[in-house]
Image 1 (cartoon, helix red, strand yellow):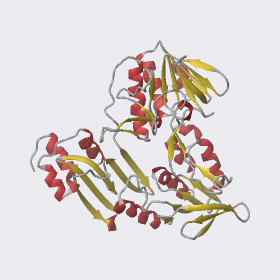
Image 2 (image 1 turned 90 degrees about the vertical axis):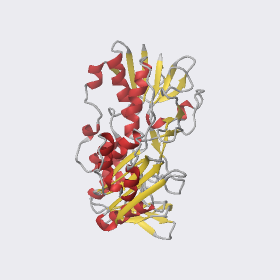
Image 3 (image 1 turned 180 degrees about the horizontal axis):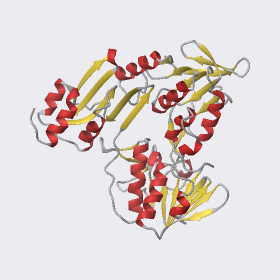
Length: 415
């Protein structure tokens, strides 16, 4: 069997390893579009603060794929032909496959503003991006970060530790608006500002102009203009699906997959950021661009490619974010459901917040700030669709009793 994997991120790497474990005699080829060995984007902030070198970002050691018997190709796929079962590379080569996995991840999306292509403006997505940022983000440099979403806050942490003068500009009315509600998002904003970072919410960058020396002038929608040595755009990502748009594969926001992570074409699978698969909480198909989903997708897709029929239960929306020492989390339907109930506790002086979302007597979503002891319990209760029974009312009175609820339910203990 000839397995071909496009994309050398976590989903692709785990799929390749799983295939070789299940079918050691099969041919497995892994294609990565970047010149570096397969690496983790989540490790880039550690590279920026010089906690690790470039090798520290690598997903596996330098000889791993050779020893595993996986062929690693560094090139970009130009097109996929499901009829001939081939892919075309940018270098002109053509590769054939019996089963194909598309795990091409996402790419950053730049806002349509003037000056976005200036050399002082940089995304933070690849190792090459990180190298360029490291050149300009020296201690004392003025840096404007566009976007305070999940990715933006990870970059924020690294920039702050590099000792730059940092200003964050977020179009939403709070930080991390796709992860936190107004209370938690504004708590995070206040925390970030207490660490010496300037944060503008409900504000956008109207344009970027060349200024004196090597700096740029960043015009904000509130009328302010900021001089910056570096501008980093972290305003969102989109799946890398352009190369399959003419392949006859069903796509929406991403590549549509079924419960086996198979696409509309037999023997073509998709995994990770590029796959639009089942959402555990809603049952609908959506894109979950987070590393736990990519890892899960890679393993399950490989099982099915190797003939071990395995259903994907659905990806649970799960985010854990450390911003300058304040950990915020969100799980499942953190924004609540129609007809559901919720309860929250807010202790702003101690930087703590918790909100639970219920549907009947099940926990379906949660968000927290400054509280990490409940992370595993929250995920377990949501993912197992646990009936809370009398514990639902107890949690409505005191949402911090999650650990007691878990013990009480799983061990049938009454308090």
